[in-house]
Length: 478
Image (cartoon, rainbow, N blue to C red; front, side, top):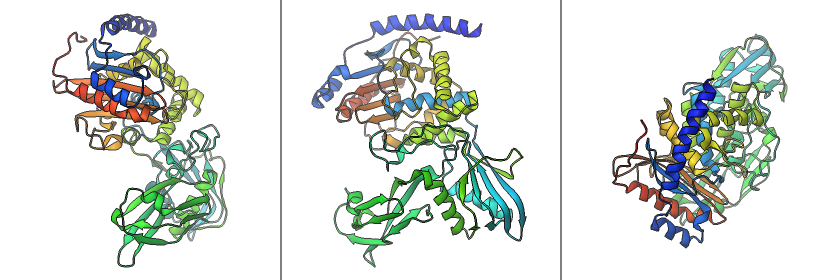
């Protein structure tokens, strides 16, 4: 009964919104058109919706109903849905079992770890997990480390399937037991007295050599320091840096996904356990967790903190972990199909007819199939503004010119919270702008074109145009 009533009300509101869309200005600002022309991108490749928060009437609507690929702006659907369905304080749990007896520092049995999708089981928290094992009196495991990864049934794909860049951390696949994002952070620390930069790697992966331990320092600028390293990562067991490092760079870090993703968990756990002085007589293998109560449980940070990391830094693998978690918690299955069904139903209920044409593929936007219209995205942002979880979502968006993926922007510095999106042929921005009028504006702009990323100045121009508003918009809701 409630759903039918909700659908009827949504349809009535949508009919009114549709008439206002038809009456909205459909001429792009001249500075936006000029930027598109310079990038050789036709106006038809752009969709736009600009609308004051709480207002019925858009300030600007350009092809608002056309479904397009939104790239990482799609994360707004996943993170907002999760905040509403799970709550900002919700956390993932990782249970651990000491399966056997402990005597004189020896666990005579297996250490079992069950993954439930925690996207922040990074090196520091993994160290704390193993430290808890030691605090329970274990320094030697006379058995195996068993990993239960059954909570997710993620598709088995090669990291390079999407764009041929398998070592980019954003291409790491989802995993119920995702350790340190299956990546290695290489550090380069200059030592001018010795004329070298010391090379470090975290975590230490068992059986993997990083050579040499230091590389020469050179003079010059720091613009292409990664290229100057001449990294050779073809052999996952032997990572080499055959170049040099500019002294002017100071300390730098470079994160790369490990080339052998399947062996990552084993190598990371064995390497860390040995560094901590532990011994393992068995192996690291997949298996099933026992049905008994765990010896202890590791909790993740609260969902609000995870959502902040996802949106501020557009973290794809964390978004996909959250996406599958919605399927697991709401449908009992950590599968893409279950997660898509959860988001499809939630989107239809919260956005009404405006959700038409929306297709949420994997929750991260790292997809060629995902679709949303500017109208649907703007409606999402309007609904979010009226939601109890609005503060958590708003604070998760990059602050223009300050942090996250918008830290280099110089448009409306500190006056806009904007999620960005970028693929080979997509450039997008969506969020909220505090205009000169003192009123908050919803803005959505997405370009789908082979020259999309060359047309980013057009998005900047649109943000600036929105910021320059000094006139209040009429016709408020309620």
